[in-house]
Amino acid sequence: MIKLINLHKQYKTNKGTVTGVDHVNLHIAKGEIFGIVGYSGAGKSSVLRCINLLEKPTSGKVLVNGVDLTALGKNGLRLARQKIGMIFQHFYLIGSKTVFENVAFALEAADTPQSAIQSKVTELLQLVGLADKRDSYPAQLSGGQKQRVGIARALANNPQVLLCDEATSALDPTTTQSILSLLREINRKLGLTIVLITHEMEVVKELCHRVAIMQDGKVIEAGSVYEIFANPVQPLTKEFINSVLEFKLPMKLWEKLNPSSKVLKILFRDDAAEQAIISDLLKKSGIQANILHGKIDYIGEKPLGTFIMEVTGTNEEVDSAIRYLIDRSCIVEVIEHA
Ligand SMILES: Nc1ncnc2c1ncn2[C@@H]1O[C@H](COP(=O)(O)OP(=O)(O)OP(=O)(O)O)[C@@H](O)[C@H]1O
Image (cartoon, rainbow, N blue to C red; front, side, top):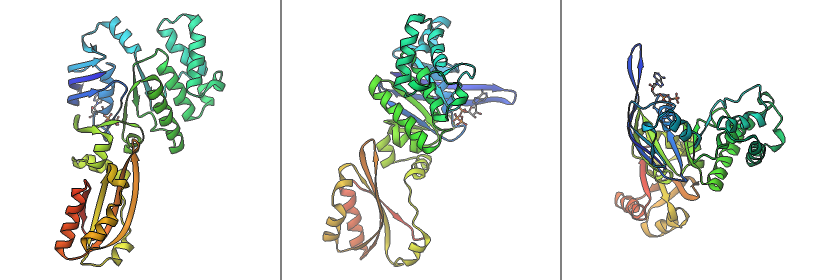
């Protein structure tokens, strides 16, 4: 659905040239929810804004549904943009217009006949759960409700792609969950391709199918959300994953550990997360184990288990226990005693 080919964006400033996007290549499939993660200044907004050509790439191509947007003239681009909806962190609603009028505005801008506007806006407000707020003004709405108006407006012209620019960053955790559920529902119901940028890995874990991690304008790692969570490679990716999954053992617990023991952090992937691997290991290996922490996260409905275990035994026994776990697709890390 979306292909970014060697996308490069430089900004000219009075202090010189700044690179926003550095030769990025990404393919985003139809119907996919794709996340782009990175710290401030990594280039996420620049990439997102190049997808609908709000920013004109310095070089490279942007293909949406087979059409190279960089090759379109003004009118072609205007029509192509109607098929790419966008929502924003700060909503950008028109304060002097009602909820109904804000959504209708997008249809009027696309020359939709008045007769069709009534029913389309009603349908959209129902979809986003705001049928009872049609005559309210933005100032009378909560942040979550404002974002729902933003979503209805973005969907007005039946887009194939929805771009989300930090769409939940200004919302509290409960409202964030409700907006993420709405985006998930829209993706499923309408088959919409969604690209979202965020600095919150939790949002990616909750919603996305695939993710790209950006640093200094480059995509440094990309893949399925499950693979990235289960096996991050780049240090920055690990940092983002840890912000969601890491559990730090309390100091008090470290003090109680046997100094000659080893502490293992074990990641159980896929089916292994639901099997009795640890009890089998204890039966077979001769080590003694003390479970310090354990939990199973569900990422896109697939389980990812994390256990932290103190193990005591001879070096050979511990090594063979680690091999046993690795043979069963677990990822094992020996944590240094604190
Ligand atoms: N209009 C602009 N003029 C000059 N430099 C810009 C402009 N827009 C972005 N940049 C620069 O490009 C780089 C990438 O910025 P961008 O906003 O794309 O990053 P980001 O990851 O979205 O950050 P944030 O989360 O803070 O929005 C930064 O160094 C930024 O200063």
